[in-house]
Length: 332
Image 1 (cartoon, helix red, strand yellow):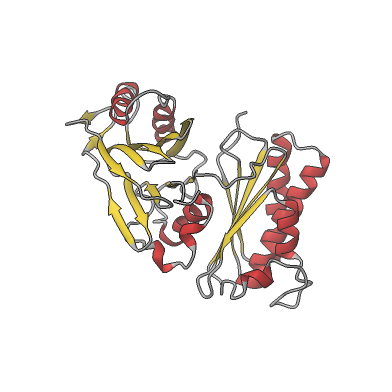
Image 2 (cartoon, rainbow, N blue to C red):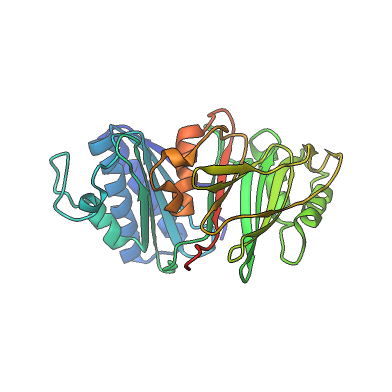
């Protein structure tokens, strides 16, 4: 089903709540939600938007159709407010720091198939809620977010994943520049992703496919989610980092632009420790981030981590994308 790119809506005061609700209802309708699910999606987004105004002095709502093909709506709320000092109390009904009924997070949790958030005190809040008929019970091992630059109707960043048992192949592509031509290049790379090929073979395949386009930077990571074995190949300025607690390790990409000029194709074998993260991002997200500054963030849903990095490190003058993968924990 063809749907629009994720929608970003600023919610600075109560007047911003209704547009967010209407956008959620529109996506829910496009996804084929029945009347009950459309109503639940509207309530979830209304509560998220109201919380932004009431508790954080405003923020942003991001809405998208779930990228795994399920009939589900992902609603993401981001703010730079005071965070939540007592998360356990806040997720229950009857607790409020702003004089309300204290049913916001409780209602969101009851109506969402999955709910996760990062909300350390004085660090703002990121909430991810998924509403839909086919919501996986388990936390996803891989997720990401690609957002268009303000004013653009097409996103020049794109990502995808394909699974073969424990092995997942992840692509993040950044079409040169931004706008429809950049999106065309990025999606040409996405169409070449398939199982059974090494990371190096995949970027070579993309290089040939992107010749009629303006070209792209791209990174391919073939990761065994159980063992942590990683085959990585990158061309251009897609950043890739392994995060294990306070320890980080950056992965090397080769210079060039897929579809135009690449001096050399090369993949690099790596190991991702149990429970560690692999983070890929385009140059629309600044480097220099440190997830260890956010208590508990490395245990959050990968989409929460991706949204958190975009919230705090987006450059604002290009498309932006972050993809996060987590290997199985040692006791899993």
